[in-house]
Structure formats: structure tokens, C-alpha cells
Amino acid sequence: MAKKECGCGGGLCQWWEAAFEFFERNATTLDRKALAGALAAVIRFGPGKNSRVPLIVGSTNAAKSTVLNAIIDVFGFSNIVHRPGEKASMALANLMQEHKRFIYWDEYRPVEFAARGTVPVTQFLSLFSAGAMEVTLSQSFNNGNGECRWRRGAAMTSKEEGLWDPVPAMLGLMPVTNEDIRHMKTRVRQFPAKVAVDGDLAEVPQCGESLCRWLLADAAAFAKGDPEKPLRRLKGKALPPLPDLDGQPAGAKSPNVVSKRQLTAAEKVLIEEKRAAALRRKTEKEMADQAAMQPDEGDAFNAPSDEDVFNHGHLGFSDDGEHAGPDPTEDSEGGWFV
Ligand SMILES: [Zn+2]
Image (tube, rainbow, N blue to C red):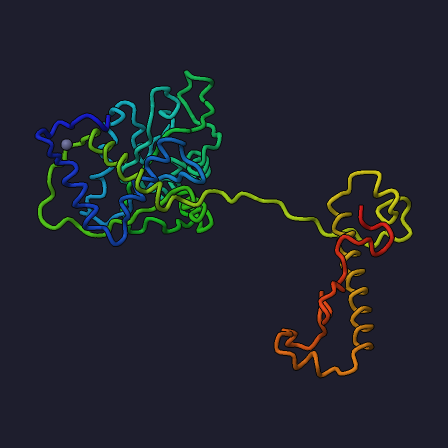
């Protein structure tokens, strides 16, 4: 569809003109590439942790529906799940229709609809996280209930004012708490559009072809730049060493047993520790011997080539260049190396 030309003709698109101006006006709060990326992701994967539902939040006259209205042309009016009536009794029944391709709720107010019971908080949360949910249908279908899991695209626009204000328990309304609202907000990704249109509002055509081309261009640019963080991949971490196994029956303590089978990670850690301790003792002993043989302690300290700035003694090589340090492959404590 992105390759086709829209009905505006002459290679000039009025929808794109309006959309472009909308993006320019709101450039400080709304990243058009991020919006394209979010929209492309939710169309591809359905609503989820890494593809939250884009929600354009704007003030009155911000023309916040300009961009998304062209979605209707992309999927076709009858294939869109439109915003339910505020007091609809079976608001989500349309989701069950196979041919529905996209949820576009223009001027939707999640908290108000939840308070009226049209789309309760729990349904909103399930619907926009690909969770399974019961949908009330007319009595002629499935005894009036159907199970639904929405895996297709969705987007919304909302007026900013009072959008996320909680609703107290009142006659005829379900309370919507701050906690509810915090959860609902995790299902959407908000794109603020605060600047009102300067001058007269224009009639804007819904050019699906042009929207698709914008999505392709900007979503691709977005994917290279700053995608939503993918889930962290765990590398795995060494387990803590086993406690001292003294007094245990046959186990890591016995070199004979160890050598006959594969070592566990914990046993390897234990062996490393024992080995390091053995090397430390050996080095300390050798240094003590060396110090005893050295007639003048000051020599080592004053020698310019000697980088032992802390005067802790010299590891590895003795003054005559002979290798005197511990040999790491040497079996220093009877069988710890396997
Ligand atoms: Zn056009």
C-alpha cells in the first residue's frame, strides 16, 4: 500500500501536509519517528510489553486525530473496532468478529469508560496486554459470552484535561483508583500534542497510502535509533561456593573422589579458593625466606627499576632473574588440581 499514490494526486498529499505540520508544531513533545515505531510495532505484534498502544494526548484544537484517522483508510471502515458508545452494554462484542483488524478509539477516555463500566479496568488491562478476556455478547451467541485475546493493532487519541484523574465511589459509577490508573497507563505509550492549530481547521483526507509510506520511512529510521528497550537477556552467574564440607561423607573434600567425576561449578570455586590460599601461603613463605637472605633491605626499595612502590616485597622474579615465584600449574597441596 505504501507504494501506491493516494487520491490527492500530483504527488502532493493533503494528509501528509496536515500530518507534517502536526509533527512540526509538536516536535518538542512528540517524536514522529517514535510514534511511527510504536504504531508499526503494535500493528505487527499486537499490544504487549514491547509494543504498547500508542495514545496521542492533546489539547482541544491540537488536531490530534489528523495522523491516526488515516488508519481507517488503511484497514477499511468496517474492519476497524471503533470507540464504543459511552453507555454501550456490549462494548467489546465487535472484537469477536473475525474481520476486525484494528482498534482505533478516537477521543477515548479510559478512566471514564471504566467508571461507567463500559470497558472496566480489568478488561482494559487484559485487552491491551494480549491477555485472555471474557467478552459479553448478545444472548444468541455462546450463551452471551465469548473468550477473546486481541493480537492485532490498536491506537487511541484522548483529550489531555482530566484524562487520568481518579474517580471516587459515587452513585452509579465504579471507582477508579490511582492504582488502577497506574496499571492502565502501563498499557499505553503516550504521545503529547499540546500545540493548537494556528488558524482555521482544515478538512483533511484520510490517505492510507501516505500513512503507510510514513510508517515505512519513519519506523525504519526509528528501529535503527531508539527502539523501546527489549527485555534483558540473563547471562547466568556463578553460584555461591559450598560451605565447608568437613565431616561430610564422600564429597568434594576427597581428591580421589573429585578426580573420578565431573566437577560441579561449586566444587570448582572451592578448589580455586583452596588453590589461591595455598599459593598465597607459599608466596609468603618464599618472600620471608628471600628477605632473610637479603643483607640490605634498602636495596630493593631504592632500585629504580623495581616498581614495588608499596614495599610489600617482590612477586614473581628474584633479583638475579631466576624464576622464583609460584608455578601456577604446580600441585601445591596434594591433589587439588585435577
Ligand atoms: Zn493524500
